Image 1 (cartoon, chains in turn orange, brown):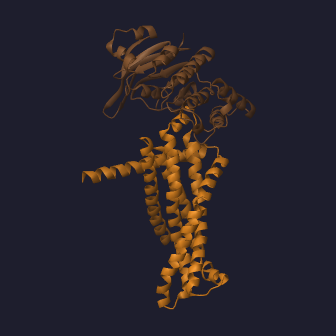
Image 2 (cartoon, rainbow over the protein chains, first blue to last red):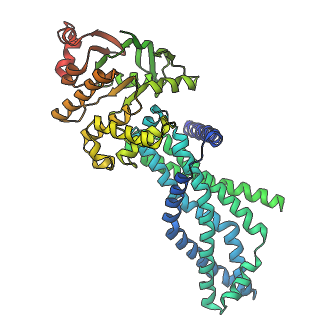
Image 3 (cartoon, chains in turn green, cyan):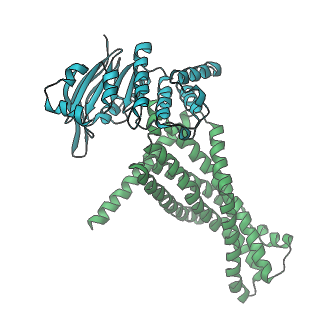
Length: 255
Length: 244
């Protein structure tokens, strides 16, 4: 019981510190002179570095989803519905969530490790002593870059998922590209695409902010960097699921 | 000489452990003050409290006309603008070249300077520490001694009135330690920079320090010039010179 109390207290304290960190970030948003070049550099590193992994997982997701959903729909003679079902699933839910989880691992771990290593080697203290704000120069560009890049990676992964779905669909059926696009993208509506991209932006923001927070609060040398990197990935992933649950509920209500 | 820094009754605890109990000391203009003490006696905590990297629990820190106030970010900025800090590991920004370490610091601290002036100051600072040839090298390509000198170049480029050295010669061979000590002396003699030097290196203390303070159990135990402290009858002070 005591362990549960301690764990709960620790989680609540961490959430409180992340909110405090967010408030510092928000203040920086208004006083900061946006450094487009730094943001572009981080966006490039995050985006280009993730293209292969995100494309591959997107392709496999589309492929597997098509293979697994086809037999059930075939029982009802509704094979033609497979592309639409897969596309809507991917665009609305699977694409944003899976890609963001992968980015939490790939991008979030990198952010936490970079900032954590700077913390334990006194580089952040050196900035503070030199009256250079780490929030403005380290945190802000990374959070903005993650917020911009992760939705783009989600969109990119969705396209690869469509490609995978097309390949899997053609294992059993014979559909031209134009027919497949008509059966898949042709069935997408505003509510399938735009809200999910906005959701991806929120996921990107959370991955950036949470990873920066953990990196920034690293203590205890190199083992501390390992432990905060791990916490950054786990917490970002949990945050993605919690926010997804909330967004889906709000979306259902509005729809 | 005018007093440039004063600390009165400074206290700091970490949990149950009281690291600084009641530290009172001062630093005069153009003076090098060395602080000696056993490992874990709170020497680094003391200088981190001066620049607000660690906030003290009580007491008073005054640098020139500015009093450290945890609730007032402006006081922190004012104090940090007067002070430079040489970290034990150098703390160079490892994603930047040596030149960029200095340019980045200068661009943020003195944005009013034009590019040409900034570049001149970067070169001048590197020349001062003898590293102008290494301007395009990354910190990982520099030796330990070069990293310390590079870090010193980054510290002096903002022209601080006071430099706080956290073990500037630790981990360096005798010749490199001597080079660092000479730089500390040159900064005092040529630029009038005052310093607080945390060190275990007795030759460095002997060469650089005008005054020595001994930190024991979280407070200043003894104070004086090198000759006085070196020949002190106090067993603790004597033990430092043999065990450090």
